[in-house]
Image 1: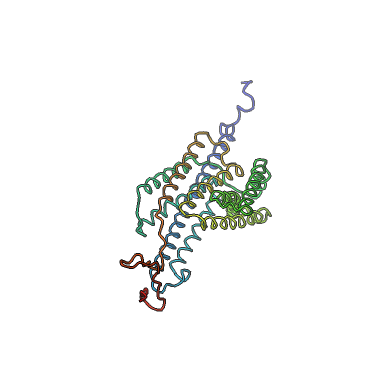
Image 2: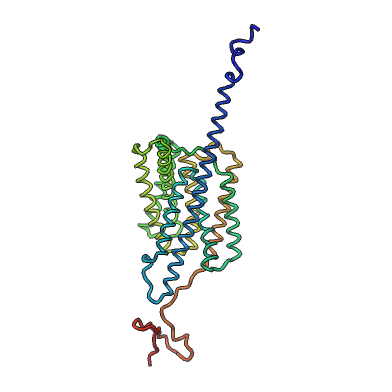
Amino acid sequence: MANEGPMASLPENETFGHNSENNTGLFSLYNNTHQNQILGIILSIVGSFLISISLNLQKYTHLRLAIQQNPIPYYKSKLWWCGMVLMGIGELGNFAAYGFAPATLIAPLGCVAVIGSAAISVVFLKESLRASDVIGGTLAIAGTYLLVTFSPNVSQEVTAVKVQKYLVSWQFLIYLILEIVIFCTLLYFYKRKGVDHIVVLLLLVALLASMAVISVKAVSGMITETFKGKMQLTYPIFYVMFVVMVASCAFQVKFLNQAMQLYNATEVVPINFVFFTTSAIFAGVIFYQEFQDTTVFNVFMFIFGCLLSFLGVFLIARNQEKQPLQEPFINFGDIPGKETVDKIQPNLNSISYGTLPN
C-alpha cells in the first residue's frame, strides 16, 4: 500500500527495538540499585551489631577487672582488645555501607546498635529487663522496618564529577552558609560565654556530623567506584573530602566526649542519636538529593519510621539503671554505737580493708 511508508518494511523487532532496549536498561538499573541498597543495609546492620557487641565486651572487661584484687590495666586485657577489633570492623562496615545505600537510610539504622547493646547486656551481663526496654526495642525495630521499606531508591554511583557538581549546587551552598553561621554562634556561646548546655554541645556534634556524613559517603562512594574499575582516586576532590572527613570526625568526637563528661549517658545517647540522624538526613536530602522524585507517601512513612526509632531509642537509653558510685571507705555512722563522722580508710599494705582506731 502507498501510505504504509518505509517503516512498514522494517521487522517488528527493529521497529520497537529501541524501546525494548530502553525498558531493559531501566529494569537493569533499578535491579542493580536495589541490590546495592540491600548490600548497604546488610553492611550497616552487621556493623552496628558488631559495635554493640564491642561496647558490651569492653564493659564486661572493666567489670571483671574491677573485682580482681590486683587488676591489670584494661589495655592489657585480650578481651578488651577483642572488643576494639570488633568496633573497628563494625565502623568499617558502616563506612562501606555509605558507598552502597543512601545516607538518609544508613544514619537512622544506627538504632540497631542501641537495640543490640540492650539485648546483649540483658542476656550476657545479666542486667534487668524492663517493660519500657521491650516497648522501646519493639518501636525501634518497627521504625527500622519502615526505614528500609520506604527509603529512597536512588542510584548510589558517587563519582568525583558528581561530588564536584553537588558542591557548587545552590541548595548546598545556602545550607553550608547557614550551618557555618549556626556553628560559629554556638561555638561563641560555648567558648566565650560558658554555655555548656547539653543541647548546645550536641548541636555542635550534629553540625559536624552533617559534614562527616557528606564526606564519608563521598570517600566511600569513590573508593567503591574505583574497585569497580572506574578510577576516582586521581581527582583532587577525593583528597579534599578525605581531609574534611577526618577533621569533622575528630572534632565531632571531641565535643561528644565533652558532653559525656558533663552529662549522663542516658541523656547524651538518645539526644545525640536524634540530632545526628536528623543532620544526616538533611545532608542526604540537600547534598545528594536522595529524595528527588520520591512520592509523598514514601516520604511520610520514612519520617514516621524515624520517629518510631527515635522514641524507641529514648525508651531504651533513658531507662538504663544508673550505677551508684562505690565509696572507698565506710562511714562510722553506718556502724551501730559509733557517733562520729570519721571514716575507716583502706589499708593498702594489707588484704584486709582496714581497722578501727582505738
